[in-house]
Amino acid sequence: QVQFVESGGGLVQPGGSLRLSCTVSGFDIRIAAMKWYRQASGKEREFVARIDETGRRKDYADSVKGRFIISRDNTKKMIFLQMNSLKPNDTAVYYCKAERSATWGQGTQVTVDS
Image (cartoon, rainbow, N blue to C red):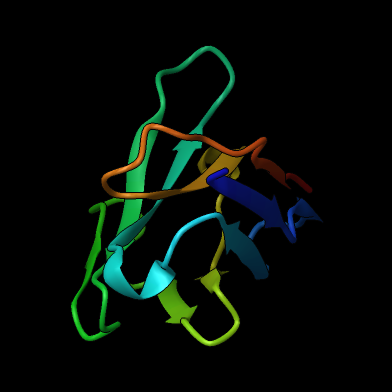
């Protein structure tokens, strides 16, 4: 059973940092490109970042480019999202997902507020 478990969210002040983690199970992560998405209250889910199978290619939404860093540890079956210089409009539930999977995890809430 494919499963994604996100963690690391919380309340942070503007300008602060958080590191999200995603633990993957149920398939071979080494052959999967992975993505982070987010969904703010009342808005549609949107793409945040993508990392290819090797970890060499990374792509970001314009809104987070230069502030967020996606990474992976295939031996631990984990995906990470380092979020720096956080802004109030980064507030959302964050999800990780395999690019070719239809399965979503529960997400982790990130709130940026002073």
